[in-house]
Length: 166
View 1 (cartoon, rainbow, N blue to C red):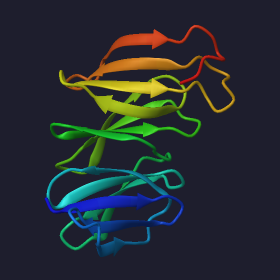
View 2 (view 1 turned 60 degrees about the vertical axis):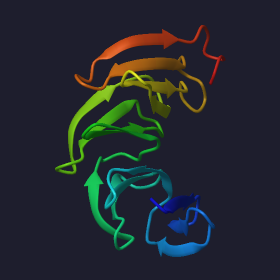
View 3 (view 1 turned 90 degrees about the horizontal axis):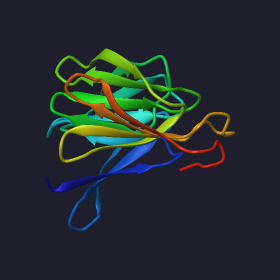
């Protein structure tokens, strides 16, 4: 619509601005290190957090926190496809959590490479996950393709050496 959502790193807030003029219209506060946002509908968004074990559910009509989805792990990137959201457990993790957007519950988790940090869904509906191999490169970096309909890994590209990092 007419709004844009700016996650202000290390501030605990999201600035809601008029998309055409970039003037602030609201501030969503009380967030724990917000990282990425996914707009689920005109009324709901999910926000990942580097230092919280939950994904925050935001009510976009009131610009307030409405709920939390407990992952028991911090989260980084997020990608939305159909009725599911895919959330990366980045810091020391190697899982992608699948959340049903109707129930706001985790319905599945997938093991991928170490520290999945970037994700995108392509035109065919395939989720591409870039795993960096760990902060100190103790594992190989990987690029993994996941079928978003059945949550199965369909392709896995492993970088040739541990020092090759995305």
